[in-house]
Length: 247
Image 1 (cartoon, helix red, strand yellow):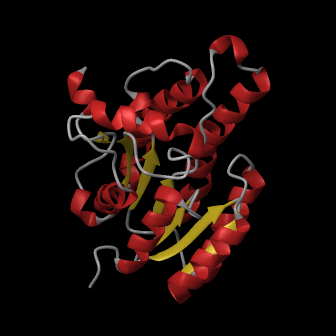
Image 2 (cartoon, helix red, strand yellow):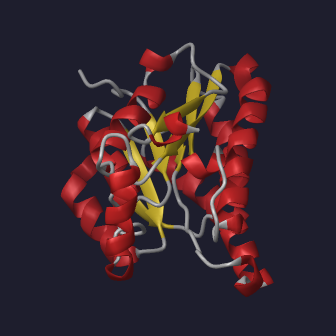
């Protein structure tokens, strides 16, 4: 029996990168998975790969109505939601002086507001279960700052704080809420043609001398989604090859 057998999960940003890795692993561990994204072609292809225990839904994570529809469709297809992985996110890297208000708000909406909307939307469904697990994907940039990522850092610090507040509030319902703080992970957002040299440079600065694999992050997310982490809530789980150990 898989570690997530009998559980129903929603994973945002699930069409590729870490989200797709989480979806694959969740299905392998016995969960029924609804994964969402705005990348329809990639999402539908992954749904075909994963089979009857997975469903793809196009979803704008900044839209409350979309969230309500995702939860309704999940319950209709698989039953009440027991796991939420708030994984969707973007980064716009540029100096403060070059940032537009529109760009700043876009990052905040996708990375931060979506986490609030997601937690709020799943609660009525999650309360129908015998407990639940919410995993909010933050970043090591939610623990420390870096240049040229002011909106990203602001959003990821916010996710860290929101996680702690929600964990305290939802504990009486048996719902656990934790944040995951990845370092540099090999995803399409990170490994782009114009960032290859930078990624190599950054990898050399990591104590383990490499960037992480999405599957390694999925190992941690599965643990937090499963009953194995039953006494963990309101906590930060770092997976960064030792990067933040230097600070």
